[in-house]
Length: 391
Image (tube, rainbow, N blue to C red):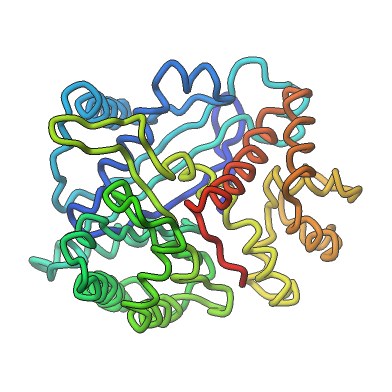
């Protein structure tokens, strides 16, 4: 999880990145429009502890327009071809947040950077050196992400019913080949990355078209039809990173539906998994990093990056476990008992609800938001929308 101090008048910003990959037509634009548009509606704004604000007004207007056209006119957003977009959303704490809690955390806002990588770039060769350079630069911009989501198009699965492997093998092979083509330009002198998307989630987009599939059925379909291609993608991603044992590719699965599409009507209220996008970006990788740091014996550059700047969620949990948390935030690994970190990795259920409730009572909204995200991930698992790796 990437954190850095931003010189803003209101304080520092906790920044998270997520990268979304998918072929053209897989639903990337509908997904981000559904996410942002729903966050602008009165019911969301009244119940949420934060406001979702597009930092570029033009992005916000375009995404909200897409959402309103889906809701009011049943018109899906026009396909975007070769567009490279990094949407920046500010998550501003609502008025009334505890001043002391904000001061203690060092953050009074969060930012989600949503990287939307053009699907055509995995399907077509670059038109020339300029576009090839643009592909490399765009890919470099998303290296701060911990989580990458690969969209598997439910419409294409439906169209290939009985021979789903034709589509699945093509999709995963195209992504692997696209990464291989980028490798030489992205790696400086072959030096591998410490900071790189290390959790690659396979997500079924347009899952409303396949009502018989829950996340386990989706997992089983992929393993049965394209296990070799998943393994190949994992091997290719491993070529980009230091400590490839700290890597999860095709081990986590998600069902997504940005809306329910019917002839002449789009029901934007019928959504699946979209509300998990923020929790996935903000807190999902924390537990995985704890496991990997332990496997690396809390030593080396990769472990230091994993444990440096432990987010507020971990601090809240550590306090609950009776572990002293030093400040200010920064590299903290040397000050925390690894056994406490291991116990924290199991923080869930009632204990997690206790942390969340305590934070709400104290108006410590940043802790409440992050622990609330963890509770949403738990609910996603219970509803068979999210399947997390146990490794």
